[in-house]
Length: 256
Ligand code: HEC
Ligand code: HEC
Image (tube, rainbow, N blue to C red; front, side, top):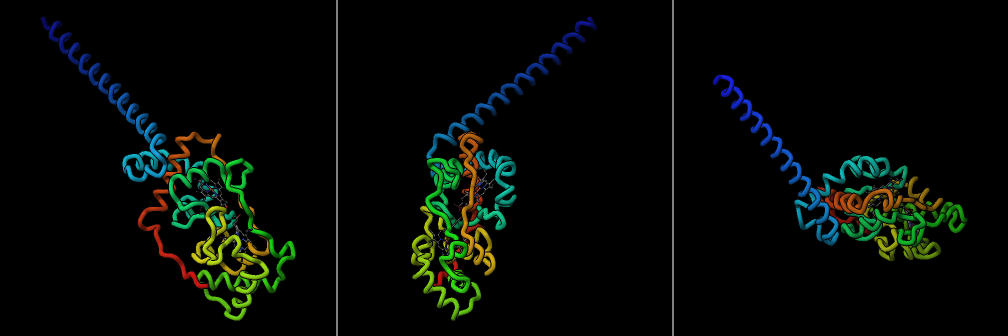
């Protein structure tokens, strides 16, 4: 009799353990299904519609952050602040070299890269080496640097900037790529020179170097290295950081 009570208790215990295990398995299966469901949604929703769905954004950001640390932080910095020694732009602000910063635009840059030689990569033009090729003299470059400082709202030397302005619109025709209003052209990655947001530094020395030696920065393509879902998640992550309220800032001085 005593033995029967004991074995009934044991049976109950076993049943309870079995039930607990079963619910764990069910819960895990449920979580897995939810995860897979989110993965499918992330890839099937149009890229620019993802930001309208906060749960999808949270899902993408959680997937993307470890990938960002592993693959992107070495060039763009842990906090997406950029690295002027490498010419890697900050990704947390609302200034874009290519496109207008929508998920679709960011994703395209990630898929094919910049100047990678792939057919769909961004690679329409480079920053010419005005000094190395002898197109501009040392003095002309120094004065155009002063004009760029004026354009971006920094302290500048007015007589030199005036000369630089003539070089910008005349001999060098900088506006052909950076625009008559110097606000850049995001269809081929010519930076906006009025915003005081720089990829390679905005002090006189860095500007001189960019104009003297030119620029030909490279950004790897991620198609083939990362999955489409990972690339989409990263694009949503960059979008969400750069579109958080603290990232928005008004246009710079924009002097002409
Ligand atoms: C080897 C360094 C390097 C790595 C690694 C790298 N990038 Fe870049 N990235 C660059 C450079 C340099 C540019 C700017 C190219 C130019 O000036 O045209 C750039 C440009 C970009 C742009 C375009 C920004 C704009 O203003 O339009 C985005 C978006 C971007 N990177 C995201 C990423 C992400 C996300 C990763 C990781 C998956 C990554 N990058 C990894 C170097 C890198
Ligand atoms: C053929 C098109 C073209 C012309 C002409 C051109 N640029 Fe550029 N410029 C670019 C591109 C593209 C970049 C970005 C290149 C890169 O990151 O690899 C750039 C980069 C720069 C940068 C660096 C910006 C940064 O964020 O670090 C400065 C400064 C600049 N250009 C100024 C000028 C000035 C001044 C002139 C005229 C003397 C000029 N550019 C003429 C296309 C051009």
